[in-house]
Structure formats: structure tokens, C-alpha cells
Image 1: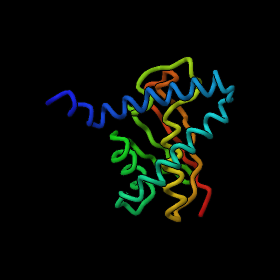
Image 2: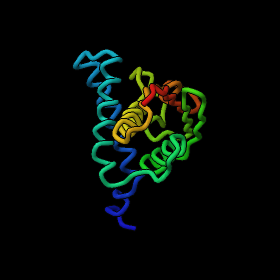
Image 3: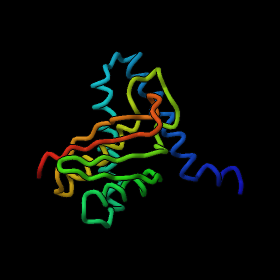
Length: 155
């Protein structure tokens, strides 16, 4: 395989995207003086914009919310996840989050917040329960896995 063909693969693209996210977070934090709340809003908005474009071309086949989330995480972000559905929450666990491969003590916020924006926007656009997502744990902070929790807000 030539070097050019290697640059097309998903892992290379995700690696570069991950690096860019953390550089963006540092620029927003250090040069623009954004606080963590504003950075979080910016990352989620990026995810919402990705969803607006991505779901024009692909949609999950599942009908149940937990299956839909699993399909989105695995198809778009190339990672297997475990989804735990409880009464008013869904918890998604990733051992190998594509955006939080390394501990980053300098950023203070996890890049995988972009994924939350993708999920929230997909549900909003498809008349599913509205979700509020948050990162519970992240490899960015030294945890062993990333855990995202979505709280159902009703329809």
C-alpha cells in the first residue's frame, strides 16, 4: 500500500481530527479566554453541525434508542460501545474512545463532547426523546474509559 493510500484510512483521519480538537481547545482556552462551559458549548455545536451533514447520507437502521446510539457510535466513530439503558438515562461506555486516546492534563475538557452534540442533534432531528449528554469519565482525565451519560428530557 502506498503512503497516499495510508492517508485515506479512518484511523489516520480520526488521529488528525483528535489532534486538531485538542489544539482548538487550547486556543479557545489560552488565546480566546473561553471558560470550560463555552468550550463545551462550542464542541457540542461542532457535533451538531457534523450531524446535520452526516445524516443526510447515512442513518442508523435501529428503532430503539439504545440500538440507535450503538449504531451511531460504531458506524461514525469506528468504536465498539456498551449501552446501558435505565429509566431516564442511557450510559454509553467506550474503552477506546477515538477522541480521548491520551491523558491531557492541560485541556480540562474532553474532546469526545463532540460526540454528544452529534447524538443530541440526531435525536432532535428525528423526533426522538430529547437528550442532554455529558461526559462522566474520560481517558483525557486519566480514566480507563470514556463514559457518556444521556438524560432523557421527553419528546
